[in-house]
Length: 569
Image (tube, rainbow, N blue to C red; front, side, top):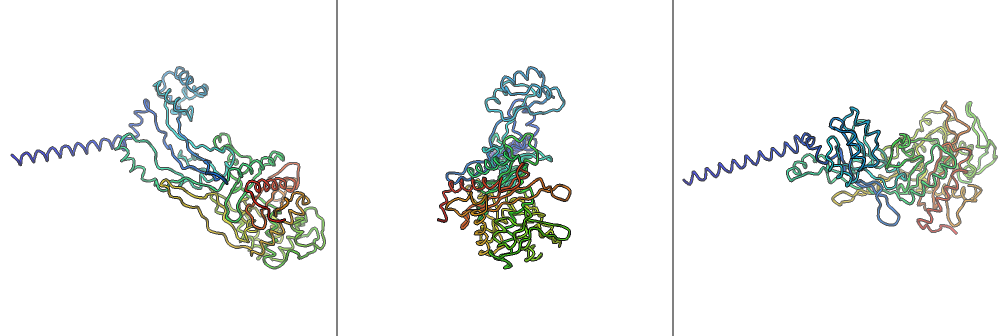
């Protein structure tokens, strides 16, 4: 009798175990294996979750004072869609929906409803209240889909630097497309956040979501300072609008650490509404454009000559105004000879003949070596979601004219970010900095990781950089707009550049210009380096006319904002 009872208990236990396993398998088939089919069956009665719905880490900017502020974040809402294959009474459906969503486009609704396009979206970013009212109508063929979208609180300010999230032409997966959204896409991604209805679904969902490591998901903190970003864009806009330029851009960077405080270019766009924005406007010319910068390259040539010992600051040469190399004649900007001239005047008066003389003293190999060390033809490695390299391939040829024009910044094309990095060697004791936008990552588990880049190489001796800083300060004190723009109590370094634009036929258009200016301050211990440029400004010839006052105004604003003390009596 006892053995029979035990056998029955074992039998019942086995039966219960089998039923439990069968139940688990049933839940698996509904919620995992055949999940899509069951979702389709329930679409008419319940809110759906958009395929590819994402949660994404926040991108922060860093004010000088106060807590970090979000520059890119994620919000939730709903999509209203129709499926013409299920829709019964088009007119009644439209009127019912329009009463809840007054912005509903009548023409678009009936075009979709009467067409053969299947599922079509009508409205995005519906509120919770509107979504619930539509669901209460229980209209066949009308769907409410839960979704999320990226929000950019600063709109057009720093738009190109932050970038945006979007789908590609190849798929519908939302990824960072430009800027730090792209550079840090894998860090910003969140694991699958689809809501599950019960414990079993959550257990199985863990299997599905295993491909996304929660520990690797993070928020990004950047070096961008929002007030400085506003200052830069306002300054660029004043130039861009006044001179009706094709492109106007700028970068403000720490010349020692490479931290980017602001980087912008006009025309720009609002990251929250990119409809109709041309592709070239979405791309950041600071990292994806190359230009012949002209005379702001001259300080690098002078630095190479001083560093190599072929000239000194007060060395003299005979300025003839023009010279002919092979069949090409090149001249000073005004064609006028200066006679016996000190090297300081090469920068103060921006004399082409002076830097051509220095290049010839250096020789082709040594000159090319310095420009290669400055990495003007290389990518900088900046975390901006992609960049192109500069083009100094003309220096691979042995033509005298190629080297002569490169000495004053023509015949070679560099990116703005590559240019400011090279020029920053003069403000950083002769060492290349590593430009960067990311500051740190904060992971979901609370751990933080500083974003670091390897230090750059030394190009010039400290003494050479100090000499150039003094020379460029003299340019501001005595030569830039006749010394009228200097700021009492502060050493400010700067150099302007005016270059001809190419004509598309292998030559230059003598009526169209590329203006640039770079500078840094305080010159004895620089905290900021600034690069400004504007392409094809109308009705003006020289960069000193378009950019000098803009630069000095930015310097004054930054001195005030950062409370930088005077550095000389």
